[in-house]
Length: 539
Image (cartoon, rainbow, N blue to C red):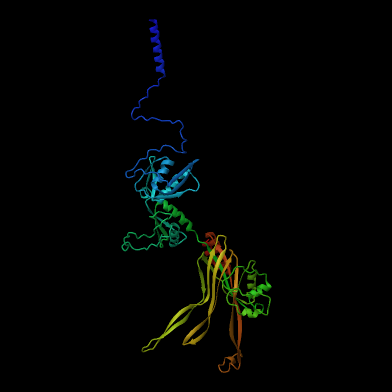
């Protein structure tokens, strides 16, 4: 009996021990409760990676599979992009979803392709501005509304509707600025800018479809709806553009609408009588007797090589001079002192001393002289009177000076000079009276510093004069004048000299200074009180 109890106790103890070693049954999982599974060794997470936030899908925009054309790399807060003909939706999904991790929604009308690659990584803060540019190239943009970025076409974004802006120009012509803007803003040169034609409201036709004044070309810096018109009457630019495009256009206009540079050119045109020491020309006298520095700048007129010391060759060489044969500078006023000495000796005749202001790259012209009538053709009208019809053309004669300056930032002035001195010398009878016009003309290119005097010369002319001398009273009798008088022929040689001194005018202060200086010189010549009043009123 005792043995049976002991056996029973041993069996119970073994059962208890066996029950403690048996694992607990698996717990049942309620439906809808997620279960987390942790592997023995999880792989390291990707940089900046994490679960995507829920993306609200718009109707008509099904999920699209990823493409190999979209590649990005994130390292230390900097991002590299490589979009190779990628779909715009994939680019949006990568940037807004994977990189920025923000909520976004895409309008189904946003379509396009993206080609963009960064050579070096860009900061994370620049991603949004880069995306704005990429979307703009596909006529799209985004707005932030309650923590959701809405990617929609540009026309649906508030503030991107084109508006009309008017910019009045102060210093430049509207047509000129419009022509420059069309080259700057248009990527392919398809932009056209036309002046506005002012008409009454009753005669103004209705605008036609497609009859735009300015159209931005493909790849331009502004939107496709940008229009540009030039109003010549008000000298204004009328711009139809979005506020963002107009801000860019306005900055460009401000840089173009600057005060044009001008130059005041003092000109002295004189004739020197060549005799005595001047028989070979002014250049020879300055070369032999004065410390004269030749200008190294080249001229359109060939420089004659008669500057040598061989006097036997000088007369023959000097006879062949035609055109400006030399050009030089006058740094210390030596040449001007020589001209003053010649004037005091009655060997210098000043033909003109004009002052002319010319704008940069604009031609200025001075003409002092007459218009001589020239008969170009004759015809006889058959009829009762048999009259002769003569066609007359007027020819400009006298002193004609054309100057076209080009000014650089350092104050160096390049001048294109065309000088003409002409007059009618005598009359010949060829059916009718015709004038023979004697003309001396030359053109040259020269370069001078601000305030530097340039001397050009070498235009030599031989003039034959007939002088009748005789006994007073008796020499005036028609039949006996050749007995009591004689005719003497004399030849006079003259050389034309032109002195040019440019003064660069960069602003209004310099212009006022030049004007005041010129008025003071007039004041010294003429003591009229009206000049004093004019100077005071214009200061």
